[in-house]
Length: 159
Ligand SMILES: [Zn+2]
Ligand SMILES: [Zn+2]
Image (cartoon, rainbow, N blue to C red; front, top):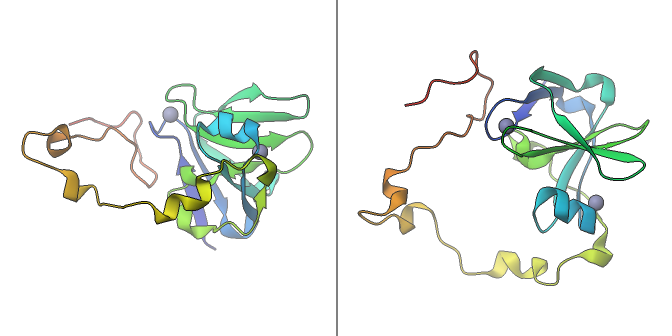
Protein backbone atom coordinates (compact mmCIF):
# COMPACT_ATOMS: atom_id res chain seq x y z
CA UNK A 1 0.00 0.00 0.00
CA UNK A 2 1.32 3.42 -0.92
CA UNK A 3 0.66 5.88 1.88
CA UNK A 4 0.53 9.55 0.94
CA UNK A 5 1.45 12.02 3.67
CA UNK A 6 1.39 15.78 3.87
CA UNK A 7 0.80 18.79 6.04
CA UNK A 8 1.04 22.53 6.41
CA UNK A 9 4.13 24.66 5.95
CA UNK A 10 4.93 24.91 9.65
CA UNK A 11 4.28 21.22 10.43
CA UNK A 12 1.67 21.71 13.17
CA UNK A 13 -0.85 19.81 11.05
CA UNK A 14 -0.02 16.48 9.36
CA UNK A 15 -2.27 14.01 7.54
CA UNK A 16 -2.09 10.70 5.70
CA UNK A 17 -4.20 8.55 3.37
CA UNK A 18 -3.59 5.56 1.10
CA UNK A 19 -3.11 6.41 -2.56
CA UNK A 20 -5.95 3.97 -3.24
CA UNK A 21 -8.30 6.26 -1.25
CA UNK A 22 -7.71 9.13 -3.69
CA UNK A 23 -10.73 9.10 -6.00
CA UNK A 24 -10.30 12.18 -8.20
CA UNK A 25 -7.69 14.86 -8.77
CA UNK A 26 -8.52 18.25 -10.26
CA UNK A 27 -7.98 21.98 -10.25
CA UNK A 28 -10.72 24.54 -9.59
CA UNK A 29 -10.67 28.04 -11.05
CA UNK A 30 -13.73 29.31 -9.18
CA UNK A 31 -13.43 32.63 -7.37
CA UNK A 32 -13.86 31.03 -3.94
CA UNK A 33 -10.98 28.62 -4.55
CA UNK A 34 -8.81 31.47 -5.84
CA UNK A 35 -9.47 33.38 -2.63
CA UNK A 36 -9.14 30.39 -0.29
CA UNK A 37 -5.75 29.47 -1.74
CA UNK A 38 -4.54 32.99 -2.57
CA UNK A 39 -3.66 31.50 -5.93
CA UNK A 40 -4.68 31.34 -9.59
CA UNK A 41 -6.61 28.10 -8.91
CA UNK A 42 -6.97 25.39 -6.28
CA UNK A 43 -5.37 21.95 -6.80
CA UNK A 44 -7.45 19.36 -4.92
CA UNK A 45 -7.56 15.58 -4.60
CA UNK A 46 -10.74 13.91 -3.35
CA UNK A 47 -10.11 11.34 -0.61
CA UNK A 48 -12.48 8.80 0.95
CA UNK A 49 -13.41 10.41 4.26
CA UNK A 50 -12.93 7.27 6.36
CA UNK A 51 -9.37 6.84 5.10
CA UNK A 52 -8.08 10.37 5.70
CA UNK A 53 -6.20 10.47 9.01
CA UNK A 54 -5.03 13.58 10.85
CA UNK A 55 -1.73 12.39 12.30
CA UNK A 56 -0.66 15.62 14.03
CA UNK A 57 -2.75 18.55 15.22
CA UNK A 58 -6.19 19.56 13.99
CA UNK A 59 -7.03 21.81 11.09
CA UNK A 60 -9.16 24.89 11.71
CA UNK A 61 -12.33 25.09 9.63
CA UNK A 62 -13.70 28.17 7.91
CA UNK A 63 -17.35 27.92 6.82
CA UNK A 64 -17.02 29.37 3.29
CA UNK A 65 -20.65 28.69 2.28
CA UNK A 66 -23.80 27.03 3.60
CA UNK A 67 -22.59 23.65 2.24
CA UNK A 68 -18.79 23.73 2.49
CA UNK A 69 -16.05 24.20 5.07
CA UNK A 70 -12.41 24.78 4.24
CA UNK A 71 -9.61 23.57 6.47
CA UNK A 72 -6.33 25.37 7.10
CA UNK A 73 -3.53 25.58 9.64
CA UNK A 74 -4.33 28.22 12.24
CA UNK A 75 -0.60 28.65 12.98
CA UNK A 76 0.82 29.23 9.50
CA UNK A 77 -2.24 29.68 7.26
CA UNK A 78 -1.61 26.89 4.77
CA UNK A 79 -4.84 25.89 2.98
CA UNK A 80 -5.45 22.17 3.53
CA UNK A 81 -8.95 20.98 2.63
CA UNK A 82 -12.25 21.53 0.87
CA UNK A 83 -15.00 19.74 2.82
CA UNK A 84 -18.57 19.60 1.45
CA UNK A 85 -21.18 18.51 4.01
CA UNK A 86 -21.91 14.79 3.82
CA UNK A 87 -19.42 14.11 1.00
CA UNK A 88 -15.82 13.08 0.78
CA UNK A 89 -13.32 15.84 1.53
CA UNK A 90 -10.65 17.06 -0.88
CA UNK A 91 -7.08 17.75 0.18
CA UNK A 92 -4.83 20.50 -1.20
CA UNK A 93 -2.43 18.77 -3.58
CA UNK A 94 0.38 21.24 -2.89
CA UNK A 95 0.29 20.28 0.80
CA UNK A 96 1.19 16.67 0.00
CA UNK A 97 4.78 15.58 0.54
CA UNK A 98 4.66 14.24 -3.03
CA UNK A 99 2.27 16.43 -5.05
CA UNK A 100 3.32 14.63 -8.23
CA UNK A 101 1.58 11.45 -7.00
CA UNK A 102 -1.91 12.68 -7.90
CA UNK A 103 -1.85 14.48 -11.27
CA UNK A 104 -5.07 16.41 -11.97
CA UNK A 105 -7.35 15.07 -14.70
CA UNK A 106 -10.05 17.77 -14.75
CA UNK A 107 -10.54 21.54 -14.48
CA UNK A 108 -13.60 23.07 -12.82
CA UNK A 109 -14.97 26.60 -12.67
CA UNK A 110 -13.29 27.53 -15.96
CA UNK A 111 -15.68 30.45 -16.44
CA UNK A 112 -13.56 32.16 -13.79
CA UNK A 113 -10.17 31.12 -15.15
CA UNK A 114 -7.76 34.07 -14.98
CA UNK A 115 -6.86 35.05 -18.53
CA UNK A 116 -3.09 34.73 -18.25
CA UNK A 117 -3.05 31.33 -16.53
CA UNK A 118 -2.77 29.36 -19.77
CA UNK A 119 0.34 31.38 -20.68
CA UNK A 120 2.24 30.78 -17.44
CA UNK A 121 4.21 27.79 -18.71
CA UNK A 122 5.48 29.91 -21.62
CA UNK A 123 6.94 32.64 -19.37
CA UNK A 124 10.71 33.13 -19.16
CA UNK A 125 12.07 30.71 -16.54
CA UNK A 126 15.07 30.40 -14.24
CA UNK A 127 16.24 28.17 -11.39
CA UNK A 128 16.57 29.44 -7.82
CA UNK A 129 20.27 28.64 -7.77
CA UNK A 130 20.87 30.82 -10.80
CA UNK A 131 19.53 33.85 -8.90
CA UNK A 132 21.79 33.50 -5.85
CA UNK A 133 24.40 36.23 -5.84
CA UNK A 134 27.03 36.94 -3.15
CA UNK A 135 25.46 38.98 -0.34
CA UNK A 136 21.87 38.27 -1.36
CA UNK A 137 19.49 36.92 1.28
CA UNK A 138 18.98 33.78 -0.81
CA UNK A 139 22.63 32.88 -0.29
CA UNK A 140 22.13 32.90 3.49
CA UNK A 141 18.59 31.58 3.78
CA UNK A 142 17.53 29.04 6.44
CA UNK A 143 14.17 27.36 5.86
CA UNK A 144 11.83 26.85 8.82
CA UNK A 145 9.40 24.90 6.63
CA UNK A 146 8.51 21.42 7.83
CA UNK A 147 10.30 18.78 5.72
CA UNK A 148 8.39 16.65 3.18
CA UNK A 149 8.12 13.65 5.50
CA UNK A 150 6.69 12.85 8.92
CA UNK A 151 8.83 13.80 11.92
CA UNK A 152 8.92 12.37 15.45
CA UNK A 153 9.03 15.64 17.36
CA UNK A 154 7.00 18.82 17.21
CA UNK A 155 8.00 21.58 17.11
CA UNK A 156 11.21 20.67 15.30
CA UNK A 157 14.55 21.85 16.62
CA UNK A 158 15.68 24.90 14.69
CA UNK A 159 19.22 25.59 13.69
ZN1 LIG B 1 1.04 25.18 9.96
ZN1 LIG C 1 -13.65 26.05 -6.50
